[in-house]
Image (cartoon, rainbow, N blue to C red; front, side, top):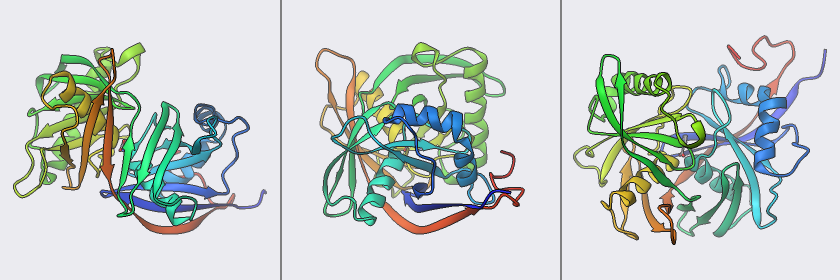
Length: 318
Ligand code: PYC
């Protein structure tokens, strides 16, 4: 029987949404680049994702981060984020958590840091006051009014947008966007997700729309323009306002001219935490560059032991 494997990691949360950054013990991807690392993780090292995120060591809301050598030497690191079901295209709450983790490790100080992801290079600015501002990849609205027939809910109309992941954005339909309606919101957005798949409604190039966002007015007392509930692939809800989701929202607001370039949008999450965002328009294009600001806190550092004698070495129901 082989020896136990030790995996060192640092945990943080961004607006309540956890990020687990692996800092030692992971298998090393032989090819540089975040895209190559995503393929490597999926094909050769999915056990790492399962061991770190699934119970008994994790739970469904945690997003893991695997660091890799970037192809672009201007980048401080490459990263692939993953959750309870697969690798993600991108994750901005995770990026904010990663930046605070790199600061905690003494690898970076306040300033601008480029990070390579599978969907492109993003730029994160760590401020002396501890907040992190991420300039995202170009984002855009693909469809302004997409109808989908959702069993038990009827016709739901939403926007389809790219924010680094594919989103279906629903405004003022379904259950109230309030924390005490979590179960109904999860059931509603899961039904929308299934209906989109069943009816062949996708992002560009037939890509799966794997995040569903439901928006409503902010709860009284919240200093925000809107409150959201975000269903992630794997059925966990985002405790943060979702950075890629807020980017998709900004792309929609830009496309419908409901927010001017440079103006601030404050997006509250279902638990009441906030990201603020602005966008700039890209020349000769319908695309925008969203810039999202949030804060994260390191919550712990630890080592997992994966013991070959443990029936749940790689998680329950891997
Ligand atoms: O913040 O972009 C985000 C995100 C994606 C999935 C969970 N959080």
